[in-house]
Length: 516
Image (cartoon, rainbow, N blue to C red):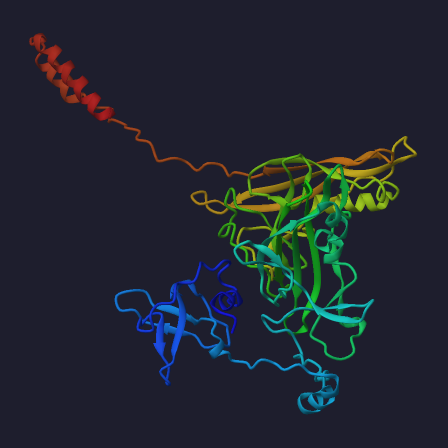
């Protein structure tokens, strides 16, 4: 052994060991002990709390100190206590003799046992991917943070049905070089050149077992401009559709990009999300009412039976359209949003159809809403609880412009709703919805960004019934001869005119009582 300092360095736990404690007398219990042969053995000790783990093959000792901290001790370098003999010098004539005596095969062929897979994915199983160009079978990765620094560990496999989000940090010592060469910064590395296997396959992989990864509005490749790396992937979101034991049915991915400035020591925070959903078991969404919609609750939409919230475009701080974040449409609240959608002049301005489809996808969202829930507690399996969204596309024919492309720039979502049920507890119910697009001619030359707008309006078409009659009113009807006793008294006592004022006063009092 090389001594205490070398051993503790091998432990990898102390970056710099303090100077060794001086060797005390062999009688000191903490620094020396007697061996079976009464040989004095010197040791260097530190507090046991400083040692997290000892992975050395050499003997160590834990000494308990009464009333103090336990000590972790390592033997000092002592020529009399060497564990290995001093190796002898091997001459050329002795080489074959030692080689035959101690030698063995340098290379042992590993077992060529093929990994065995089940017939279908189980929860937590790694998702298999296949690279056609190299015929390599691998697993889909979801980077996670490693240690206190939070640096990205790219080897973490994504687990089946394990929907979660992770984040980590990447640090670049030379950003100008990493910008163009690091695949973690390029969106293409997250969906190109590989396919996802529907179910685990250990034998021949046929085409029907492969699922392509569909990128939603994929950004361009990173490039360096004025010491700034643009189009750098900062967020990756995988949406995986599965169907029980039939495995994975579809995979889509969307990105959020950002820019990194600087060169030495630049860093980037990346986020990775994996979400699984099924048509037969739709996403768990909270009710938006029971049964009628509640004002401010999100609108429920469906696409081939998969429920989701209706959403519209959201802008970033610089006014550009966010590629991931979208505003949720809330019932009863009119909304208007606007942002600028970036277009790549090298690829897209020469293809009008591609630009039109990109703008339509951006306005509609990743999963286009096909049906709208009539009530806030609609079930995806009850077809009568949904209404089809009407779509009114605009004309794609440019007006008086031969070098223009008609592209959708405005989406107006019109929603008609009414109140039904009892007047004492009316329930909000949607009657119908329409997506109306408005187009504008876009010139090919010099078009890098397109301003787009989304408008949501709610129209109340409630047909209120006539109000019911109120409470019956009191209509007092006095007998026609109610004053007959007084008239008789007046006729018989005509001499008593002085009492006439008293009778009139009495009549007024009775009239006031009867009227109220």
